[in-house]
Image (tube, one colour):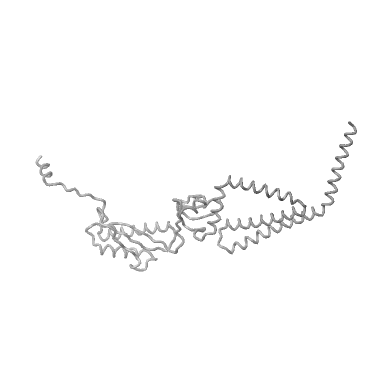
Length: 293
């Protein structure tokens, strides 16, 4: 029993002595690996700042600038790690890590399929010129100002100051109406006048009213006036004009102002905007029977 203990103790010391010799022999490689790793960390930070400065020259969203700089930094660190493993003669371990990363990456990709789709869509939205911070858009039945685009959602601030967070995938896959792509927006107003109205006078009055109240409209020719139909109670018309704004809120305000001014002009000139009415045509025989009863 005592001999077995001595043999085990000697074997342990031999193993430790072998490890110590291997450590001493590998000490230059270890020091060099540590030095390479420290240089890699410092270099990655410098390159990250450089990549961010270069991205500022582009029209990318802020989230994309930060993402790209972080990706560049991670790539630099990974390259440094490969050099470190090579210096330490751990190529087999490197192959094992790469094989495991492939399997793990497949599993994570399947589990995070929806999140990855939103991330990819966020990258696309950061590149396209049709949507950017400050634009007034309408998408997925929501309308408002774009205040942020990150790797998961697009944030829209509505007229009532509420925030709507729409997954990037839905924004990419559905139509987007951008009110901010042009310098002007068109206001469309519908109304009706009584059948006994002077239609030529109504048209001139509406055009003059719009020209006198909106700076963007310089003359009557810039106001489109169209009679649309003979309605049940009125002759309906539609008028269109441009304003110097790309905000849907400003369009709504301009439409409200136009309605107030046109109604006031109609009142001053005794032009009636009729309520829906219905005329009953009762045969005379029925009227006679009713009066005799």
